[in-house]
Image (cartoon, rainbow, N blue to C red; front, side, top):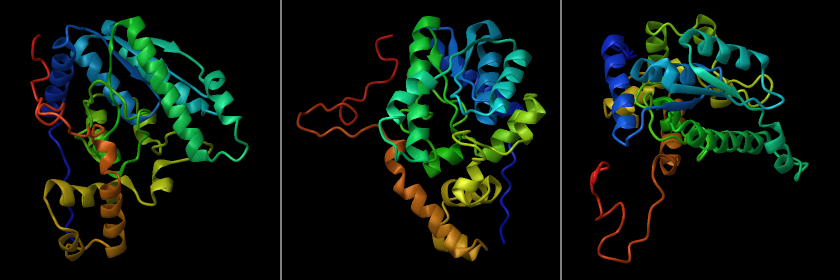
Length: 275
């Protein structure tokens, strides 16, 4: 079986990603970043990159617990706040979330999780105006490809420094940037309900799926070639179906074309046009 090497040059990755954060924020005339710090690995790394790019005094970290959130999540977020010396706010979202959840006694855990994610996005963007900062994204390449995120929730940001790193690569860079060990070593979880983990929900490990996605996406293997390389056929089919099914999450909403100059089709000026 082919066992692709996803090892990255962490020094080079850090240089590229900190430069990206600095460039994206300063190109719009700003100097500060704000981030939802969940206590997980991805947001911890994004926070560390923002600090390296802008300085701790220019980074605001938000802890946004719901009443059922794990105590570990708050504690691990605090480890990052303490280590990188960033400013922080803690805002309990329970009073914002509960009225909508309580409207439907049959509401599912997925719906509850989506509501929490979108309320956190609302708070993030509200506080970005208070702090005069751009929201930094926390979704890695694996999650983006699999659609393992909430549209206009945890996937919402002004820029994303880790979106081209697979989860296993996020872990590599996190070690190199001295993210606290308890965050690196714990099972990845969105902390939406007790005992929830990403890998239990997905049905496979990040190590397994990252190797397959690397072949399918970066090496342009066909699904059949991936199977011939030694990957289980049902696993390949399930992953490719998920990537295909979630393409809509990776796109801006399409606009129906009725004029000669349609935004996103013909009107394609550079992002910094006019600045």
